[in-house]
Length: 130
Image (cartoon, rainbow, N blue to C red; front, side, top):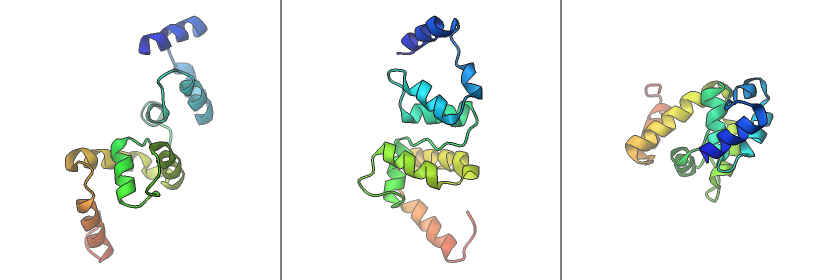
């Protein structure tokens, strides 16, 4: 798939680069990247956040499972629905940090939110800040 995308880029633009997207709007980036076979919402969101330094909130398996477990989204929410919901609700200034935190937590604790819930209860009860 990567080779096919690179060939397409070379054929269309004369180079194997997506640098022209730096100046494009988020919607334009989503439209262009989404037109490539195999490039989905998570990959597009990661490009927006990590490569283009845009305010976006990728939802991988860890983020999705934790969001479901914490009731941040309806129980039947798909990963794409979770992306739409969280991207709209999470404040721009914490999107990057929260994404990284949730992915790390998901990897370390295998998406178990028991530790997160205990920490949140402690904070809500007037304990230390996170």
